[in-house]
Length: 59
Image (tube, rainbow, N blue to C red; front, side):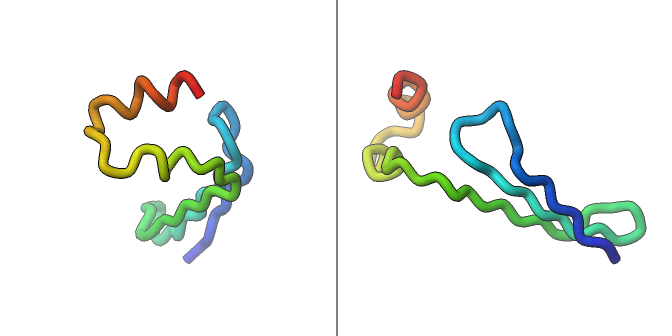
């Protein structure tokens, strides 16, 4: 069993870390964590998911 971490992942807004547990050449479990919080999530609460992409792309 091996644990692999990819940190930071670039080409996205903010900071993202991915960790994966690998057994026999296959990913058996994975975790992600974002360390940069900007509050956009609060603005999206209760909105139709189909309109969120348009709002967050402009921020």
